[in-house]
Amino acid sequence: MQKSRKVNTKAKKKRSRSTALSRIHPQVAGIDLGSREHWVCAPEATPGKPNVRTFGTTMEQLQQLADWLLEQGVESVAMESTNVYWIPLYELLESCGIEVLLVNARQLRYVPGRKTDMRDCQWIQLLHSCGLLRGSFRPHEAIVRVRTLHRQLSTLGAERTRFVQWMQKALDQMNVQIHRAVTDLTGQTGMAIVRAIVDGERDPVRLAGLRDRRCKKSSREFAEHLRGNWREEHLFNLKSALKLYDMTQREIAAYEARILEEIQALQPVERRDQPVPKHPSAIKEKAIRRRGGHHLRTELWRFAGVDLTRIDGIGTEAALTLLTEAGLDLTAFPSEKHFVSWLRLAPKTAVSAGKPLRYKKPNGTGSTRVAGVLRMAAVSLKHSKTALGAAFRRKARHKGWSVAVFSMARRLAVLVYRMLRYGQDYTDIGEACYEDRFRQRRLAGLTDAAKSLGFNLVPQIAAA
Image 1 (cartoon, helix red, strand yellow):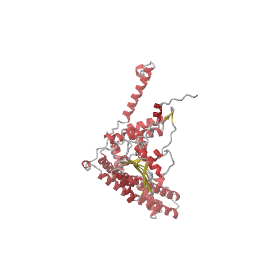
Image 2 (cartoon, rainbow, N blue to C red):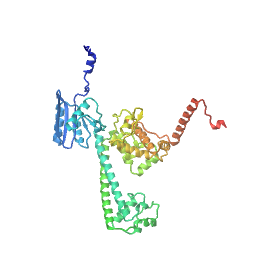
Image 3 (cartoon, rainbow, N blue to C red):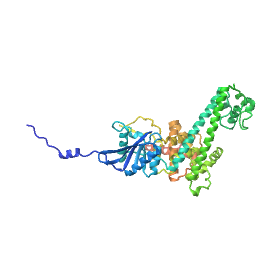
Image 4 (cartoon, rainbow, N blue to C red):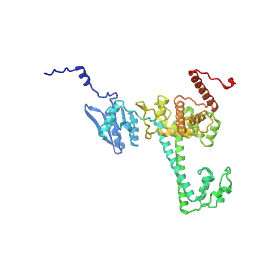
């Protein structure tokens, strides 16, 4: 006869304990976005029954969606950043006083179950109510307006570059080697020659006479490079590319003027008429004036209260990109490490079982614009006679070019964060001072290492 087994009631109670996720934000909703319809999951009105509805994408239907969420008592909404479909709904819900959390779709890629729109919105609502979703950074609404204009301006700049390449291609096909006579085709001399060719001028001597007096090559050398075959199809392509280039130039000028108007509207009243403080580097200030960026530098200082061009490697265009992408309020990043991580300028440190995980290049994010600008600024430090330039060259010698660019871009990001968050100005200590400090740190390290081995370092002069 088998003995009856004793049941452990404590273990049974422990096993029967609920394993459901605790909801710390009950009044939240989840939205799965689409091009034709949006699926919305609100808090459960009846226990055990999902509260899901679908809405269209017209403005009237989006307003109905917002009204329904307010009726359900929703305080916060989470939605995926799907293409650009989230922008109208995001702005509408934000204007209605509902907190909106813009979630990267990668956070919801591996949720269990069959993937449908109805299940997606319920998963978003559940994870948001449990506090398991992290929203993307989005600056203030006023900064977003300027950022939208500046991003379109960047697109126009890329299109302008393409039209310049078309002009260069047409000239090469005619064997008109302007690029060997001038450094920049879009400069004063290059564009004067291109316009003369489009207007019908074919004499290389007359074309060479259009060169600027500061050009190093003589008229005879210019003329040698301006003899072509002048085929009609290539001339037509050149004329078309020049027309598109001029049209894009006008649009770029209009966007630049509009961006300046938006920036001036955001300037505090007490700084609107103040001149920008003198730049600590007279050489850099002169270069900014030569490129025509002094007016933009003044307006950006009046807007931000800090001059980002004081940081070596950062010019007026880079400062404009930084301010329009990140804004002035960086309190969303508790420390400079969080800011650097958002820019994806932090080194990969993922480790499993004591071994570093294989690095997988992440998909594109909005912060790559800022990181790209900082990388370009880091490259410009290669020949800079400053402390940052000396640090770049030392890092490149020991770690390689790519590591030096990444490292200096991170250092520039830290300086930008400190300047925007705490108003901490950057002052260059100079190349010589940096090298002296590095030499002292190296000597201190060698001295400590020698002492740990029972030796004392003696300078060569004292030994002699």
